[in-house]
Image (cartoon, rainbow, N blue to C red):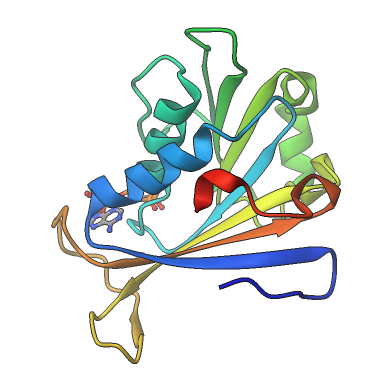
Length: 179
Ligand SMILES: Nc1ncnc2c1ncn2[C@@H]1O[C@H](COP(=O)(O)OP(=O)(O)OP(=O)(O)O)[C@@H](O)[C@H]1O
Ligand SMILES: [Mg+2]
């Protein structure tokens, strides 16, 4: 699905994944299209799959593995294992305001890295004129896409809806790798 939207939002794609592996596969494909300076904002409830998605991105980028939920660490840098950009993985869940983001100085690493921010909506948009917004939602599995926010289950194979939207000049068109 591709549609034109206001506010610099050029397109939005929607995918359904049947499990964590498929979410990572989608992210891996996207990861191969990313370059230094790119900013991604990941949204979705606790346990929706933001970190799972980031693991796939890391594979696509070819950075050092070991992407985990940064419980106490706000920022983790995963260095490139080749010639590509590093991956800067941020969890903004505990941040109260965009001013606190400035304290961790992401601008310093932005130019040489792909920056991925979980819970970044409303926090980090000012870092770049362009961004990808990724939203993960759990579907009930019924075609009417009723959404639930109870992520109590530990199941690795649940259906998720993954929406990816492109904002700003860098994302005038969706990356080919998204199919
Ligand atoms: N289709 C799916 N896509 C992604 N994750 C899935 C899917 N189905 C089940 N899961 C499971 O859901 C959980 C997602 O956890 P993850 O840590 O990625 O969420 P999160 O959004 O980063 O949470 P938090 O807000 O706590 O950081 C994992 O246990 C994963 O295996
Ligand atoms: Mg997470």
